[in-house]
Structures are given as C-alpha cells and as structure tokens.
Amino acid sequence: MLLAIDAGNTNVVFAVHDGTRWRGRWRIAMAPERTSDEYAVWLLQLMQFASLKPVQITRCVIGTVVPAALYNLRRLCRDWFGAEPLVARAALDWGFAIKVDSPTDVGADRLLNALAAHRHYKGPLIVIDFGTATTFDVVDAAGDYQGGVIAPGINLSIEALHRAAARLPRIGIGRPQAAIGRNTVAAMQSGIYWGYVGLIEGITGRIKAEFGAPMKVIGTGGLAPLFAEGTSVIERIDQDITLDGLRMLSERNPSPVLPSRTRAELE
Image (tube, rainbow, N blue to C red; front, side, top):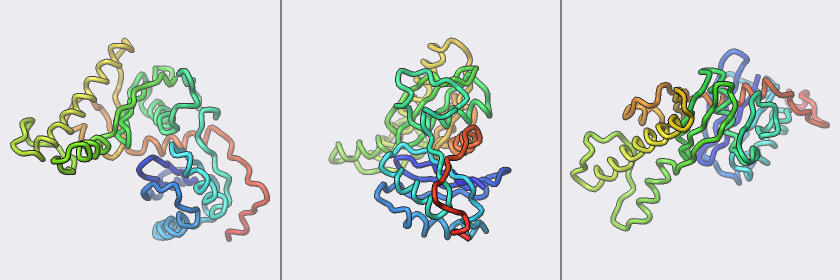
C-alpha cells in the first residue's frame, strides 16, 4: 500500500491507498517542529481504527511546501514504515513539461494538482486551489504546466483585516444572504465572500482571454464547495486531486532505496 503525505502551510494530510481506493485520510495541523515520533503516535492509532498496519505500507510519497517539515516526515517514513519516501520535486518524471522561468520554484502542490487534473479531466484547464494561498494553475491540452496566479488565501485575508483594523472583529466565512451588509459582521462577510467570487471570476476570465481557448475550471481545497455556490465559473470540485497527484507521481517514478533497513524490523 501507498502512504501519501500532503504537507501544506496549514495542515498535513496523510492518506493510504491500497491500489484500488483510498482506505483512509487523516489531517493534522502543520507544525514544522513536530517530530517523527509525535506524528507516529497520532497516525498509527488512526490507521489501527481503519484496520491498517504499518507493515502493509510498502511505499511512501511526500509533497510539501514547508521545507522545514520535510526532515521529520522523511524520518516518519523511514523509522515507522521502513520505506524511503519519494519527495515531489521538479526534477522527477512528471510526464509533462514545466514551462515556467524556474521550475524548481513551483510549489509541489501546484504540480501535483496539474498532474492529476490533466489525467482526470484533460485540458486545457485551470485548477483553483483554496488553501493558505488561493492558486490558479494553467494546464494546456498536452498536459504541460504553463504557470498561474497566486493570491492571498481567504483565511489570511480575514485575519489581516481583523489585525489591521482595531474595531473589526475576527469573523467566520460563509455565503451572506445579501451583498449589502446591515451590520459590521455582515458587511465583512459580504466583502470577503463576494470579493473572492469577483477575484475568481476576474482572474479566470483574464486567463481564458490570454490563453485564447475554452478551458475547464476545477476547484479543490476545503473552501472550494462554498465558493462554487456563488459562481458558475467552477465546473467541478475534486477534493482528492492533490492526493491523486501524489499517487500518480509515485507510479511514474521508482521508489528510492532505503539503505541498511529491513521491513522485518517492523513485523
């Protein structure tokens, strides 16, 4: 089985794939200082609830945009699952060209989204990922990665508004009943929600005009369903797209060899 680890700026998602389906997905807050043993205590208990054993994991793959977290995630794979993880990076075989000025600067999550989106939906397409940042990634008809757009994430904008304006409270995000807010909280919710809908529609419209051809728009990330309610621009929601990208990348590339370690130690 495959253990896929998607380490973002806000959360780390662990998922196990048995070759046919995802057997479990678990999420924990990102903390770069968290040790491999701390991850293991938490993860192995959750795997046990899903009737999964560490010895069943034969491959590991990691995609991270937090370099400081990589050491302990790699140690987790080595020490607790007896596998040297494949780490998503531009130098691997992606099956497509990365047509940007500096491929090594592109976040692994963006390339993973491009890989899975093209495999599932073909191209040309735009993948919008509602994460810590809101990213728009462009994939052409051949599956090649063409670049994209990075905007502040919704929660970052809410927090910045609260911190910078002394009298504005911290609010939750939701679809407001009306654009005109009759109180401070309603006005803030309207500005955040409809402001981001406008951002989504404006940026996708500009990308399509610049690209010069019809494009499918795929949404992913926790807030994707909420914002899809407010616009017809987002055609599909796919919450597994980054994990699927990790799985596909591990299938395209050989697993690294773990030196001086045997799986018998885990049994």
